[in-house]
Length: 93
Image 1 (cartoon, rainbow, N blue to C red):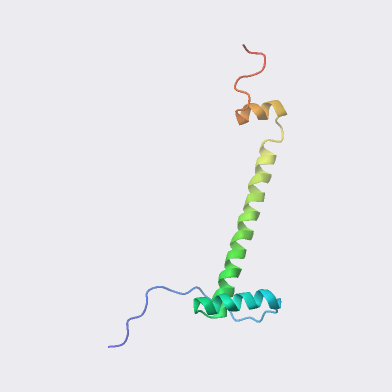
Image 2 (image 1 turned 180 degrees about the vertical axis):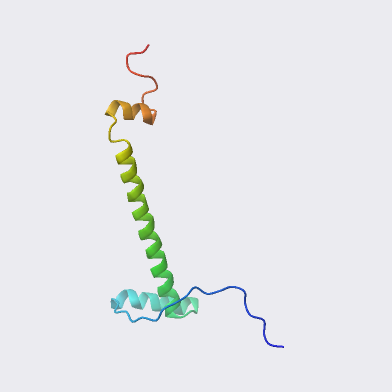
């Protein structure tokens, strides 16, 4: 019988050529050697992490913009009431 195949799948990849700054590339090569993995693995992880951080920053900006639009019609006092800074409406004992 042949060897059993692993059930885990690697994500699809594409071959490309990059021109990168020398110093960060040297650092990535050192990381790869220290971890005993190839440079492509370390670069893929760095790119994946950078892309995830970019998506998170973009999503944060989108959420903040949604809040700005949603609360645009409120006065400063109404916003303080909504935030819980003012616990009761002004003018009430």
